[in-house]
Image (cartoon, rainbow, N blue to C red; front, side, top):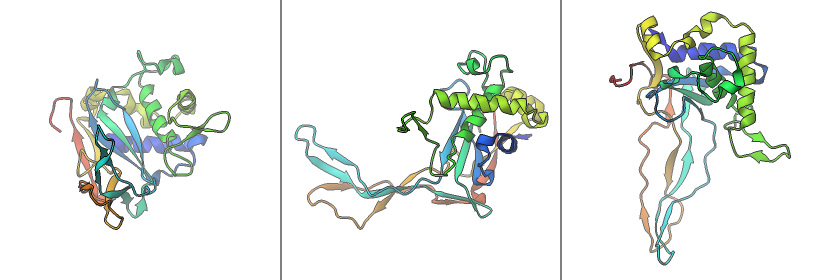
Length: 260
């Protein structure tokens, strides 16, 4: 069988070593894992998740009366935190998830990305997505990479025309650097082709699949509560605040409609 996320992680090592703009990335601090997603469904093919976001300032939700505008109830005070992930003692700063089998079905054919590439093989769409997620990693490790306008003001978008052009430029340069075919050939197969070629497709996941580390709200009990207003308790986090290698698993992914 092929461990798809393991193959992607090996390919990322080569991409980073050959791409100066991504050379700052320490892939020991990046964990690649798989999520489930049906081909043809809406949604991203992959996502970069930042684990270095700071704790927020205390806050709460509140509800107002539609007629009077008065606050009728509110939640407990809370802060939003990021869970910690450590693998073999190394703190993971970014997670990159790939949605299977959907990711495997990507093609440049009839895609808007085709305009950025010209005459290249359709499977390069998958390589583009891998470079795309790596490019989201912020050199300062403070979040998802931000961009600035020509006047120096910050662009609120994480994706813009220049982002996609940069990704295509890096992807084309990587292909022109003549990487070892053994590192990229698995991208040529769609999900059905992978199953035929390798006998099955597995990927690293978290043991609480389909869940994975995500930001959570932690209630605070030390801040004041307004008298006369009902306080709604927050739902307590059900997921761990600390994940380690013991929370990882290798899972078999099957064709759409088959039980995972």
